[in-house]
Image (tube, rainbow, N blue to C red; front, side, top):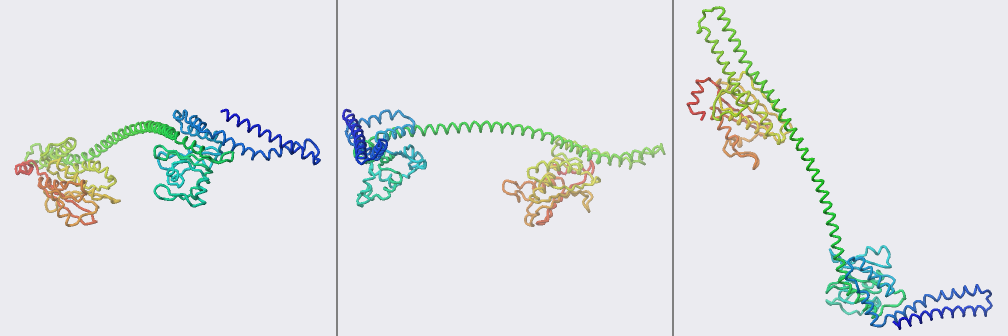
Amino acid sequence: MVKKITVSVSLFVILAAVSVLVAILVQRVTGRWGFAGAIVNSILSVGVVLSLYVPVRKFLGYVMDRYLFSDEGDYQKLLKDASRGMSSIESLNHLTGLILHFITMKMRVKNAAILIRGVRGPDFYLVCQRGYDKQFLSLELSAEDPLLQYLATRKQAVDISKIWQKTDTGDGGRAAGGMRPDYEIIQDRMESLRAVCCVPSFLGKELKGVLFLGEKKSGGGYRKEDLKLIYDLAQESAPAIENARLYDESKHRSTELEKINQQLEQSRGFLEKVLSEAEGANKQLHDAHAQLIHEQKMATLGRLAASVGHEVNNPLTILSMNVSRAILKYRKDPEIRVAEIMDVFDKMEKNIERIKAVVNTLTGLLKRSEKGKFEPLSLKLILEETLPLVQFQTYLDNLSGTEVDFNVPGNIPLIRGDLERLQEVFLNMFINAYHAMAGKRHRKIMVWAERLPGDQDMVAVHFADNGSGMTEEVRKKIFNYGFTTKPSGKGSGLGLYMCKYIIELHGGTISVKSKVGGGTTFTLTLPVYQGEETAKKISSSGIAG
């Protein structure tokens, strides 16, 4: 300490003495040569003193570096002062800022910077700097950079003056691994970074950071003692810098997690809002569906009422006419015998049976009929009430826009059959027709019924579509068990097989006509209802079984 004070005071005295001496000499010279005016002499003296300030300052700085920091004990004290409290600093920016402040103040350098290895990659990035321009703030160096490779291999501080020597002489030895360093590239890198000295920082064997130091303000170079002090400081600070980096990283991740949690919370609120809106939409959809079902029921009832009215009014009119005819004959001849008007009663009985069949069909449609029970049925009512079921089942296939041409005359006689099974057959016919027209823009189904020409005891029902049709090979196998033309998982191959079985069970037939690209027509024949005697005869023959 005494030595430092003595040197400092001596240098101050020397600087003051030199300034006074120069001023006196200038005034004497100007006075001897006859320059007039004390003011002019003073100005000249100040000018000469200022011109000598820079070289004198550099000289004094060199002397101070030489004598104030040359003692080994002083270096140990500086290192101890710098290391004290580093491990307790958690912020990376704060810690590296203090290290640079200490070095720039104690070593009196113009510029300095610290680069450390990144967490997510091998590259080194700038963490703190003093004395550099703003463009230097984005500095990054690859771990493969020749300068960093050289520092990692040499494991000691590097002075640019040594690099200049090796570049000039071309003699630099070989690095670990036998490869000779490219000192020209290393020199260019240090000069571009304004680095006079580069100090590596290791944690174990891994290079963790690099300290770049610029020129000293005194203009002097870095001595061995300087390099040793800085290198030791770099190694002492490596664990603290790594801990601070990890701490900052944990804080950064904690902040990111907090942001993610906030986003999740916002997403949760948004999801709850969406679910609430979806629940409201589902309720509206449910209400609309219920309303649609109600309207469909009302439309069905209206259509059913019209069909029933038509089916009942015709036989009721005939029945009324026959009653009037019988009454008229009785009024003309009160003594008329029953046998004479028996034909009238026969016609009345047939029309009563027709009305009864219509009522039975209506009852069967409104409630499940007893399976296996053969009874007189209205073909027109069954077909009309099967169509809405088909449209409902094929709604998801986007076939609801299909045109249906329905033509079943009112004078078609009653048929005898199992309502539930016949409705199953007709339903299958409609669905097959819908599917055969899939993909066509204009879809049309035609359904018509007639008494079979040449056999008045049979009724023929035709189902025709304008679909894709089928080949002759497919047509021959269409009623085979397990055969289907639909994709895997779409068809079981049982529909038409069961239709054929049910129709034949009723004593009828089923056939198909088709042409590729020309549509398909299925024709079903069913026996006409012949009255109770015929029904008993058919039942006893086992057809109903």
